[in-house]
Every structure is written in structure tokens, then in C-alpha cells.
Length: 637
Image (cartoon, rainbow, N blue to C red; front, side, top):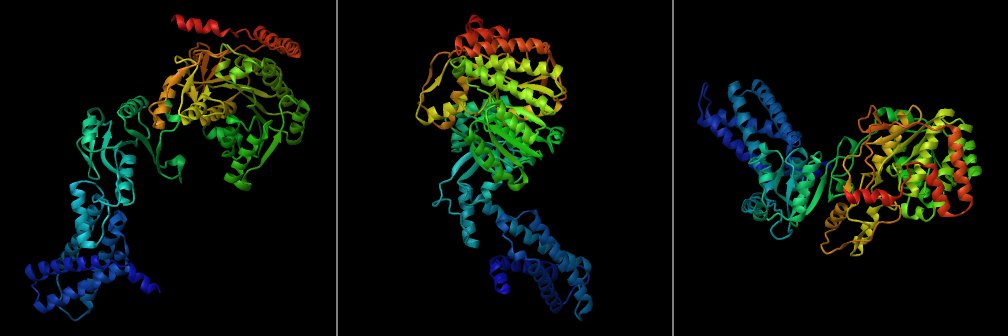
């Protein structure tokens, strides 16, 4: 059975071509070329037969004719060289042991080398013809016919497949790999026509036979002449400003713009793919990576409680922590469906290698919350449970204070009672000079955490970050739904700007800042430049391929700012070991001062009057301002 299998794997046309090459090499070196020590015709014939036997037996044993040379790489050619080297040694040994005429060492070496050169040349020509027969050009069509005539191989590109012609942005390692992947795959629906690169030194050269153009000199007419239909980005680390410029240029010209992913050290095992731009890439900035080995080591073997663990940020915190080999993760949430979803996701990913517990409980229900602390004795508590929707909290001020402020109070008290090691508060940039109830409650929580650092035994910290892309209730899912329905896309105001982060960025920031905290720090992140919501909406519409979706303004909602405060525009910030993480210098209030503020809020929410609760919140949070004041200042600029 193995004999038949081996026989079926042999490419006999290639054997015939190699025989022809060997005959030519033998005639040239053994008959036509005399040199020193001429051989008789009989001796030349004997040595030709002996050389043929040595070479082809070695090639057969080395499975040279079982390889698919159209995909051949350097390994295949090295194997061919090694087998012929062994054949040369065998030929020398047989000459010495058999009663036949001998050719000189240099002539034997020349015979093997010339034959090897011919064999390699045939294979390289064959591979070149195969690769470029995929191109829908006159050269490609000619090579396709040549392949069919000499090997019976045809790609069928002329009639069977209408390939999509693309220009690849990036003639580096990733772009070249992508192009090679396409030309090697006869079933690929894409064919590369050119490279576009931001490095001028590459212009005018070729990669795998495909021309490279300089980005600033690539005209739309030139692309049209090459019948380019889509543009594919294949530069992982392109400057974000240049990336945005090229994206806008080709998108406005009507091209589909895509991204080619290539596995890296951090995505080992992931599949390469061609895809649309992700939501995160609409920011056109390099994703921030803020975790490090020290962060991973800190959470290893710890019992960690995550409140709001089924929410957008909470669930991402669970995903990040699961990679750090904690002793146990306790997901606490009032919404059981979210907690269940993340539980199942992590069980599928980690199986029995993760100790995961789910507790359905509100942080406002102190008795139920204490039961969790008593049972698990968590070492690290991350508070991601909060009411966060700005307009909803404006109309539900009592509930916002009750949940966000007094829920946090419950956690602080239980952390002290059950000797937790660390409490980490998830905050927001809306807590900076807040203009809404949600932001004001978060600012109150920050003050409570900082105050607890003065009298408590637990290490406390709070972390602020901006809007999170794709989180529940954020603008991205809303825009997606509106675009899917054909529009219109609604903006409260086209002038609005916001700071954005991805969910992995936000969760990594919380984890690293918590790990580096000494006690009482208020961490903030340098999130770069803010993003205009209008630009975000326009880019999402472009990505969807729609052209007739209208964008309309609906007016600012209660408590909404035209812009969020510049977190980094402060003389009160100090640096940390991470260049992206800073500490806000803020004087903590005493326990007595915090207790007085909490008493004011408690009396207000007991009245069940949202207006009274709002005014009470305004009295205890000195930076709480009316949005009209802030927005009027912006409009006057």
C-alpha cells in the first residue's frame, strides 16, 4: 500500500524534465568537453549511467519528486542540494570500488553541479510561472497557457474566477506575506496589482513581481489604470495621522478599504484574515497596552471580587484577570444574564483551569453583600457596579445616589471588616467638574475612597477613564442599530467631542493602576486627542458602505457637556512608572467630613424627591456645576 502511495505521489513529468537536463549535462561534460584525462565513449556512457542511478536513487529516497514545487520554499531547494551532494559522494565511492573507468574529481563534481543547477532552474521557472499565472495580465495569461502546455496545470483565472483586484498599502514583511499568500492560492478571490508604501525608498521597486508606488505619488488615475477595486492596509504600526489621511483619501474616492491581520507574538495561533476596519480603529490611534509582568504577578493566586462583573467593563476585567492565573474570581452582579454570559465564556475558554463563582446581589443590599464577603474573604475588590447612563440618572437622581454612593459605602465598610487587601474604584472622566448626576456621584465616590485611605487598613485607589467603545449603552451600538435600519443617525450636537478607550484598554488601566497603588491615589490616563462624535458617525457610515444615511442633531440632553474636561491639562498631576498613567494630587477629606456629606445625601434620598437629591448632591460635591454654564463658555470661544 505504501508503495502505491509513493508511486502516486511522484510527479513523472518533472522526472522526465530532470532526465533531459541530466542528458544535456552529461553530453556537455563527458563527451563534448575534453579536459584532462579524456574518457572513452564506453567509459563516458558507463559513468553517465552510474551518475544517473546515484542521483535519481538519492532524489527518490529524499522524496524530491513527492514535493509540490509550485509552493516550494527554501526548504525544498536545500533538500534537493543535500540529496545531490549525497549522490556525488556515492558516485565517488562507486567509481573507486567498481571496475570501470574513472573520471576526475573535478569533472564528477562539475557533472553533479551543472545537473543540479539545471534541476533548480526548472523548478524556479515552474514556480514563477505558477505564481504569476494568477495575475490577470497579458503576462499572467501567457504563463497560464505555458503551464497548461507543459504540466497540464491551469489556474482557471480567465473563465472560472473573477478576482477582485487590490492595492496593498505596505510593502514590508506583512504586505509581502499577504501578496505571496494570495498568488500562491489559486482559489483566492483577491489578486494584488500594486503596493502603496509610505517609504519613498521603496518606490519603483518590485516585491514578488508586483510594483511598489510611493503613497504621495499614487494618483487615482494610476489606480484606475491598474483596475484596482479595493485598498487593503497591511502596515501594523503605521503612524496614526498618516493612516487616517490615507483612509479618508481612498474612502472618499469610493474604494472599499480593508485591513489585513497577521498573527503576532500577542495573537499567536490566530487566523490571518482580511476584514473591515474595527470600531476601535476609527480612533486612528495605536491601542494602548498598559499591563506588564508586574501587574500579572500581582493578581496571580489572589481571590478577586468584581462587582458589576457581568457589565461591559466588569466582564472585560474578568477576561483580563483570567489570563493572570488568579486563585478565584467572584463575579457579583444584580443582572444574572450578564453574569451568566461571562461565566460561560470563561468556562469555554479555560475549562476547569479557572475557579469562577457567580453571586447575584446588589451592592446596596448590605446583608447579602456581607454574606459574599464572609464566604469568600476576597483579597482584592474591584467596584465596577454603578448606574452610568447620564440622561437616565438625571431623571433618577435618588436611585443614582443610593446605588453609586451608598453601594460604594457598603463595600468600603465590608472591606475593612473582612480585612481585604485592596479596594479599586472604577471612576470616569465625567467626575471631573461634573455637570450631571452620574458624574457627581462618581466624584463623591472618589472622595469617599480617598478619605478611607486615611483611616482604613485597606489600600484604596480610584481610576478615571473616558468613554468606552462598544460598551452597553454607548454611542457605537446606537449608531450601528441606526445604520442597520437605514438611518438617520442621531447626534445630540455635532460639536460634541469625547475621549475614547477600548474595553481592553480601560480594564488593563484599572488593573495596573490598582496593582501599583500605594494608598489613596486617584489615577488618570493620558488618552491622547479627543474624538469628534460627528467624525465617528461619518466613519461608521462609510464603513457600512451606505451613502445616503442622514445625520441629524437632536439637541443636548439634560446634564450633557459639549466636551469632557481635559484630564491631562492639570498642574496637579504626577507621573508614574507607566508613561500613560498619572496620579491626580487631591487632598483627602477626613472621615468626619465624609460622614457629614453622606448624612446630607441620606436625608435627601429619604425624601424620594429627585430635585432635592440633586441639590443635596450639588451641596456636597463642590465642583458639581450646571451644564448651561460650561456649554455657554464653550459656545463663546
